[in-house]
Image 1 (cartoon, rainbow, N blue to C red):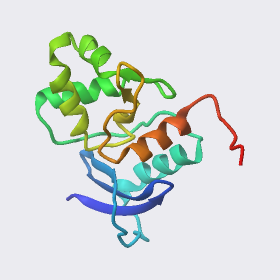
Image 2 (cartoon, one colour):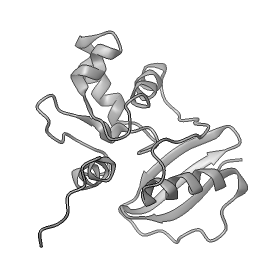
Image 3 (cartoon, rainbow, N blue to C red):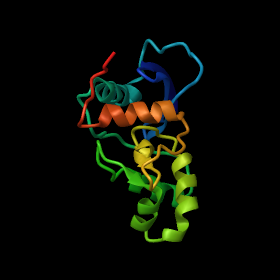
Image 4 (cartoon, one colour):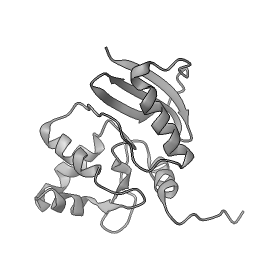
Length: 158
C-alpha cells in the first residue's frame, strides 16, 4: 500500500510517496500541507536520507526507487542519477550520453517529468551556455540546490 508523508525542507513542504517497492514521488509543493508527525516505516529511510541531504551530510541517496514513467523516461532518469553531486551537465551532453544527440527535446521533456526531484538529480542539468534552464520546482529552487551542492561556498557580502 502506498504511503504519503509531508516534511519541511529549506525549499518548502516536500511530498514523499512510496511503498515496499520503493519511492515513487519526491517533490516540493507550492502549498502548505500539514506536516506528517508519524512517518510510516516504509518511508523512514527516505525521510532520514532527505534530511541528511539538506543538512549537508549526504551527497548520494541509497533508496529503492519505483517511479512511474515510460521506458525512455526511466532511461533518462537513470542517466540523471549518474551526474555526480556538485557537478552539472547540459541537455545536449545528456542526449549524447544516451546515444542520440537529436533526442535533446525528448531528453529535456523526460527530465522535466522526473517525479523524484533531488533524489534523481534533474536540477543538475543546465543549458549548454551555462544558463539555469527550466525546473519544475522553479528556477529559485534549482539555483538553491546547485549552490547547496557547490564545493565553492560563497559567503553573503551583506
